[in-house]
Image (cartoon, rainbow, N blue to C red; front, side, top):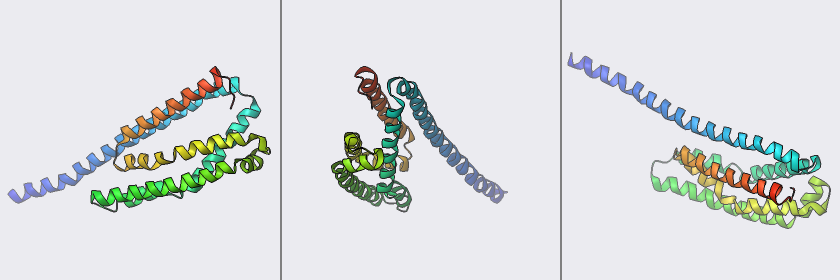
Length: 195
């Protein structure tokens, strides 16, 4: 009898652990999905502002610049974020995990600062290739400089995800989004600077 109760206890442990694990995954996933939905809603809110204060040509230029910078960032990132997630969980020791993150952060900063620094110097060429006019080079100077200064944010955000700190991750992204939205409205609506 005693052996049977011990066997029953051991068989219920894995299912309760699995349930807790599933619950944790569901909670973190829900928080990430909520954060993504809010960012999409904010983008949707900007559409009437863009259509009212920007010409279709300006809006097209903005989309081309944004797409170009996204593609360049993706190519330059060379999968560092995915590498952090992959190798972070290979180690049990906190020191080794921190070394994975710090190595990726230093490498990412070096790649982005050097690359976007050089791209800023060659923004006239980028404007000619993408927009057909070297006169629009200042758009690329602004976007490349901005991306150079924000180079250090991706790896710390991945680190938060690796530590399963989904609330911090979403809050930081929301603060960043609110700042971007506020500055967009201020520059486009209040100062009437266009793109």
